[in-house]
Length: 403
Ligand SMILES: NC(=O)c1ccc[n+]([C@@H]2O[C@H](COP(=O)([O-])OP(=O)(O)OC[C@H]3O[C@@H](n4cnc5c(N)ncnc54)[C@H](O)[C@@H]3O)[C@@H](O)[C@H]2O)c1
Image (cartoon, rainbow, N blue to C red; front, side, top):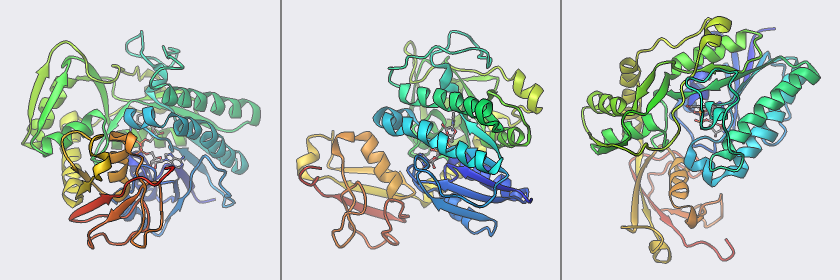
């Protein structure tokens, strides 16, 4: 049978890179994604390929899938501390029901399945670097527990399917992955620094000596494919073994972008726990290790993100008087975004108290956000993932009674 690979979360940052690499090696690829994270321009490029199919579907619901597949790559999951903290229930559902649905597809088709766990399973590690044999230090009720426990459940369920149903499962534990194609609204460190530098803003670094493991996306995708091609059960760490001090990263971003400034605040470390992988197992079992130098990777990332920020609209949110008291400083918010979905994700994660909803021009509710699209340069209102070009005003209507 020729290769046919199903990629859940295939419209996301890593997913679009993975689908592209699989198409390059001649595989037929089907991406399944509910577009919760927005619609990346890379998805449109993939859709032009005749070996590529996209299915919009929430993987927490069973997928009626009958076409034979040779492998399933399960990447679908909410990610990012802000989103995960605000939506722990959906995060846990993706890790539990979503993982079971992906495993069921692999079981029915006797396919290899690779599942993306996360370095977050190590929690706040007491061991540096972390080998896979380290069990972690995780608070099951802590602020990131929705994500951490979702991934720990994913690992447990994959292991259970291997033992009870004989499914050929492979678990990978990604550490920080970066590269072109990250959304400007992504709050993780590399994207946040690049966006700030591109805007000529200040990059404030708390605790400049804290290190992050940063793996370039092409290297990471090569690791995922090596895992797919092997029968290794994992879990296997995939990440950069050399940690980068956050202060050095900020300086490097500013010099690569050519704008922005770095302000160092000694003492308190900013968000996230320092984690660095021991990648001995990846080297031995997969013959894999990252090869892209950080400078080279950042250059490609900045070029990719600059292009995205340039094609992205500046979205002005006109905020109703009733809500102005809830939003600091201004009644008009600006946010660069590739789609209405990404803009609204940004809005609702920044100001969750608003709970806005989206209506179309006829006033019909089309999604969970209530917004009037005031400018005609919105191509077409299809729902949350309408692409925006130029400057667009989104006028948020006051929440409906009971909403
Ligand atoms: N990027 C990293 O640094 C990193 C680190 C550790 C783990 N991971 C894991 O790798 C995977 C991919 O991460 P990414 O950086 O590409 O994130 P991403 O947000 O860009 O991609 C995830 C995709 O999953 C989709 N999705 C979310 N919930 C879904 C659902 N219920 N049904 C269908 N699709 C759903 C989103 O719409 C998104 O397109 C995730 O599982 C993530 O937890 C990533």
